[in-house]
Image (cartoon, rainbow, N blue to C red):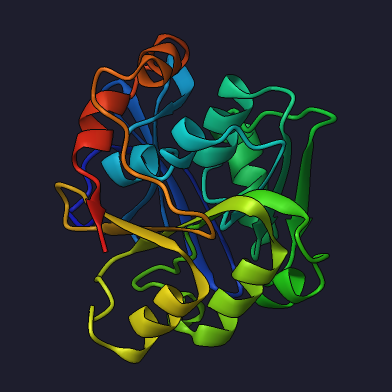
Length: 248
């Protein structure tokens, strides 16, 4: 999400990759790497509740199949980890974050949950994914971004291959793209070859979330009981988000 950030800087640190800022603005807390882009945003009173619409949309695969094991590539403020742990406390979560300082900020300022079911690895997502056993996770959420751009890895066919390999037969992949890959390009053709089901979500801030699964699924009806049940536990407008899924 791009904008000139408002708010009070309550913490600032840096590492070899640059600045890490924490800002408070009204009821929200924001993680930024450069004071222009929001990397993460939470409601301070409910840190497990994602604020950015694309983060909320990335959770939609849970409506199709409840994961027992989930992998989050790119921790940021820990928004996705917090939401998943709140909704599915028995789900085993493995988060991978490149920057140690980002993980420390997530713990200190964004209430990153600590539990036996949560494992955090400080490493590059690409070799970590290559070392992950085949068919060992039911959900991959990948949100790899630096200060001003998306990691090129998310647009590489080898990266998609590794995601497909480590997913279980009913597993789901969700990738946050700041710009949608060309629908008739090589990457999208490759994704279609690997996955039976490919769905898209366009956020109000023009992020695109691409969903892929090895089995075919139709988007759920807005009044599906599964969506109402999820809404009671994590109120992020599940029905509205589901209604905006399109088939690719």
